[in-house]
Image (cartoon, rainbow, N blue to C red; front, side):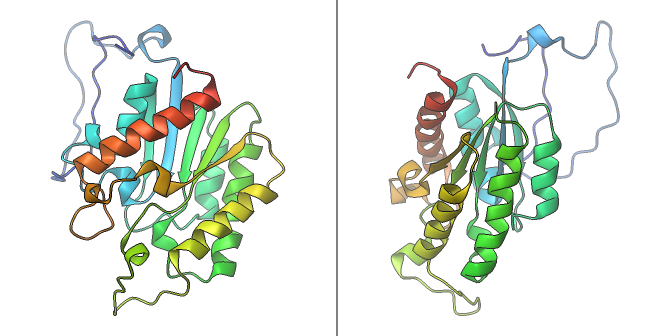
Length: 229
């Protein structure tokens, strides 16, 4: 195992979202884990409800959990459903944390109502701020995963100021313009290649899609951290 079986974790998310109230811990010989009890690698993920694992059957089936499992990494999941607008405060928060070695930034299907100029401005700040905080930490920026706009399906009640490929190109341009050598680009459609992995809304992956994404993303990240494939 990637961590000691004596370490217990509280994990939230997945298809069941009932409130959880934490009252405390009681029992003999209960203590925080020592460093040697935990994985040596900590992986931080930022993104939308897709990253959070919205339509996965359980939190262990989100694509970032699947990625972390394959890397033997401790996961910090900062997926934020309904948001992930590349808020500068979020970029500052991630950059200021000193408890991760590799990060993925899925930027971001929830911004599809933004103009390209505003999208570029927001992603550019995050793309520069997070890698710039520590050149020894690898940061992978992920373009939009396949979703309904790629199939010509338009939601009439929601304005779209650009097409999906324009947002992907804007992120490519932001990464290419970034001076930091520890920033990398990963194409979302190369992680989710089987469209049957999407659920009925053609936006959120189900379990099969999450598993494929986790497997493909882990292979890309291994190259960045020097793990054997």
